[in-house]
Length: 122
Image (cartoon, rainbow, N blue to C red; front, side, top):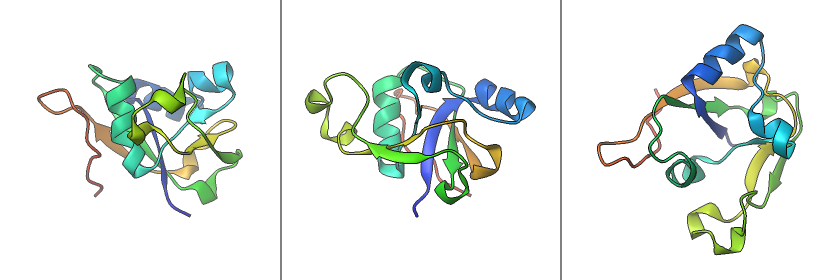
């Protein structure tokens, strides 16, 4: 199975490591943690995280998840009117993210013009 990715703040990730697990605010409000594929991550960031700094991408191995993973249509309002890059199915984690499923953490900062692009791994 392919890797999946979750965008969060460095401070939320640091707090999760202290707590021993990661729970995004969307888990309580929507019932799942939003994730994306590598190709979806930058368009998601550009649509929903514009102007933000201090972000990271959690690289997640789905086979190590202890919570259910499901692929769903976009959760944002009016998905049919969204740009093509934000359509299709997105991975959602229905429960807390266990830390051992996170195999890498990538710094995710916008470029000089404020645009995000997927960072190189390694």
